[in-house]
Image 1: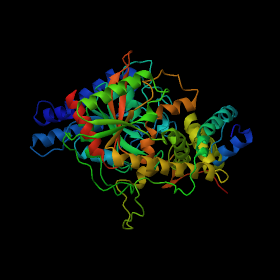
Image 2: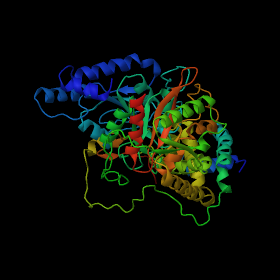
Image 3: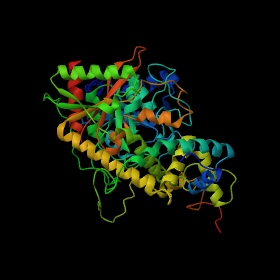
Image 4: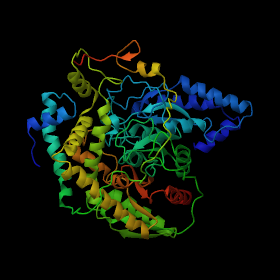
Length: 96
Length: 467
């Protein structure tokens, strides 16, 4: 891939939930194809029949008892880090 | 100033934990010009020091790091301390909980005195992507500290503290260690808990440290490591500090790491290191790791994919920056994320969204994940014949501040030696090995098989003793 359109950058920004300025879109329009152009070299590898690796130390399905461990975290200190709170709840803009 | 020396004089009453903490804080202040520290933790550190001094006075047993001050990269959560990840997103965030490795170090008596600068969210190789300014190299103020754990590397190099914590996803401990002439260790994936450290790429994130000696590095790692119920990718406890080996080892130097693209002085230092290994009776041979040349491409697909998922949590709702004056939810997400992230964070998130999107998932993410398997298989084949592998840690000594900021690919290439072991989850150590003609440190990287962290340290300690 050698180019990417403004609309495609805008779509990626939307998928990523980032509201970019026009300048940022312009600069990403250059950077993204450069990076993709570099990683495109993987296309030349034959990976037919190779299992993908997502996790390197082959641990899987590590179970524990289904009990709540709150550790040292309290409702008060979680609320204290929220940008806005009201009566023990995190305040957000109206959704509907 | 080794960890053992500090601990001994505190326990013997020749100094106190309080004096050690105060001295470290004053050294930190003298090192202000390097801009390696983002915040100091004075009150809590002195409180903890007094507690340890009281235990010693009362003749109680104290831990192996009693009274030893340290600093942590500012993506580690430390109770009540700011944890910014060097980003505007978390500029006002105060940790409501604490990283498991900090708990373990505190339990052993170590005292955290400050939080160090990094590339925002650990995205970068120079600490130039920090929202709060660049950190200068310990040897040359015009050069970068390396990154992303640049602040920790510099403070360890300047002897402000005997050890410093970093996180390493693709080289973020080893590369700045190389640039600042200190040991820097990235353990086997799963040896150290990731709990309570700002997540970057969960399949390669590891917690490690910087120190001035191999022995101190190993000591700290032995305390940090172990199974943690809060991180289900942690391995059963297997790592204990071992005596330096006298066994003759077989070491493979990776041919692909000594190409023409590598700085001649880096090659010279690597060859000198090989000569020293041979003079100590070890066998060194050149070996091939053909997938090495694809490793960076694999990394810059898989890591952005994981980054885009891990950083989705920063939405301006429950914690972190919330954009002002917005009354609509989608816009609140979009603007909070635009204002909270640095350009490199946005680049990686968007590349991640791209390689995971339905039309490109197979061609990019799946292809990279399969290529990762081939890389791991090639490592496994090498470790059937060789005990350890050797490469330079970085292709160049520290580069100039500003030299690579306009070219993401050039910046990514600084990690070309450190990324392959990360993708395979292997233990790797930067060993300070020499200097350039202009006096910049150059390091080499020792890489071991998974869970053979002990072997990496055994050789490093043997080399250290002999030099």
